[in-house]
Image 1: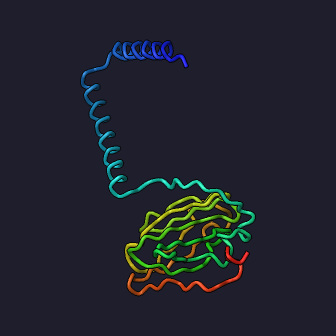
Image 2 (image 1 turned 60 degrees about the horizontal axis):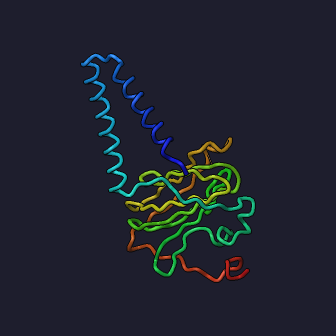
Image 3 (image 1 turned 135 degrees about the vertical axis):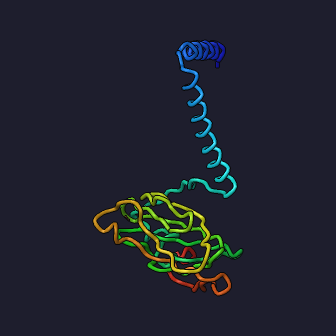
Length: 200
Ligand code: CUA
C-alpha cells in the first residue's frame, strides 16, 4: 500500500494546525492556568491508571455469548448446575441467573478472603448486579455471560442488588450472599444429579 503521500499530507496538516494554534493570542496568565489545569487532569488520570494497575482493576472484558431463551436447556446454566461449585484445584465458581425480579439461586454461601468467580446470565431483559464492599458491578446483558472474579473482604451478609432498571419490580430485585469465615466454609458436595453435562 502507498503510504508516502498520506504521511506527507498528515504532516502538512499537523504543521498547519500548530501554526494556527500558535497564532491564537493567549494571555500569558491564562496560558499558565490552562497548563496547571491540564497538569492536574494528567495527575488524576495518572493516579487512576496506577491504582487500576496495582490493584488489578479492569473492565469485564469476557465476551461470551449464550442463548438466553434456552438457559434451562443449556448444560452450564441448567437449574441443577446453579450456585457454588469447586473444581479439582479448589477454584470456586458461582453460576447465577438474573430474571425479573430475582437472582437465582436465592441464597448462597461463599468463603471470605478467597477469590470467587461469578458467571451471570439473564433469562429475560437487561439487569445489573452490584455487591457493596466488593468490585462486583456489572451489567447482565441478555445473550451474554458476564464473568467477574471478586473477593469478599470479611464474613457477613452481603446484599446482591440489581442496578439496571428492568421493570416495575426493579427496586425489589435483590438477594443476598452469606460470606463465611474461610476456615468454616466447606465446599458443597456435588451429588450425581440428573441434567448435568455428563447425563445428557
Ligand atoms: Cu433487574 Cu433491575
